[in-house]
Length: 179
Image (spheres, rainbow, N blue to C red):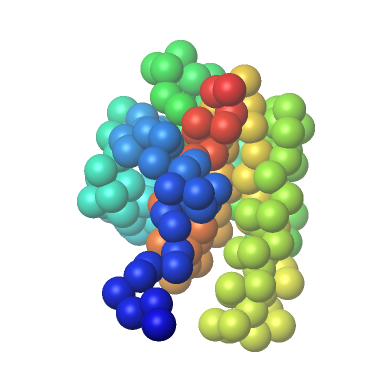
């Protein structure tokens, strides 16, 4: 007697599926572009993040374009927090130049880091661009109940991070942070 027609994968007892089922389908987010060289006409990362979030069913409550300066980044994050968003996605300022201060600024604000985000981003990036991926300092963490992601400024880096890491887990991460 065979087991034809029986599904051996029981979704009801799969913890990953169970987590996803109880995660919010739509998350309110704020997008911050950190750059000394971009303006409203040349910023590609911010609008790309907005498009990807909205296309996935999330709501973008607001967006900021600030200089890569600690005070400006903190001010934009404070504005995002006041709006009540559950996620903040920053783009730019994650490289190694002396002007790239997004990582230090955001990291100092976080209560918890999500180390796996940066590790996985660099691994996926390595598969695309090779050893140059080690120069990315992209990170994620939790700040006052808000999930925060600091992504590279390049559209390729934004697309990789959003499609492979941020969007698949955003609802789940927000649910976990709010528990």
